[in-house]
Length: 199
Image (cartoon, rainbow, N blue to C red; front, side, top):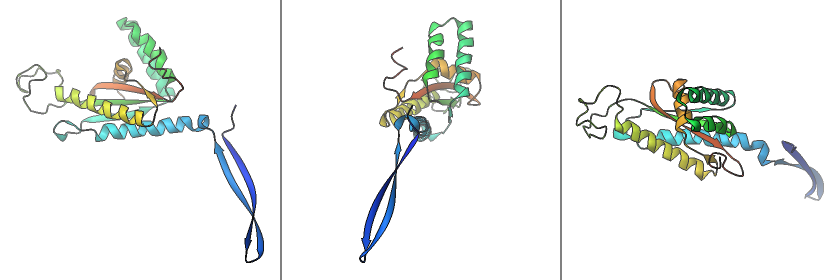
């Protein structure tokens, strides 16, 4: 096991006005394995900022983000397993195990709010005709843009991610992003091989 911090001391003699002064210089060696978790958490926070600053329809900020780690990841995994038992979707079982490899998970969701653009993207000609419970398409687009911005930020820091519908749905069921009707989850880790793709 590598030591978290190794202190190295170096004795130097400095001459000042014909007088010698003994100076002890201290260096610290920090192994990457020991600071990896904090680094990934930092990247997760950067991802949340990227989601917040991503472009949004009409500039309406209805995106919510959160970061979970540790025990919350285990709870999310257990919730996915419970959902898998009910819906019979086998990839939920795979994802429930897969997210346990994450150092943290970034959640991105949106509250439902129509933009009154009458764009028809939701399938209805006007916003007034849109049935209750049918999400405004612009909300969905906003989530997609925020996710893209967050994952691009993760890529800039060379950490591994994957967007997961299953984990997002479980987080939505747990109401971790209160009031959000659409939530996606992005597990984040730094490993020699991305565990979220080679499954």
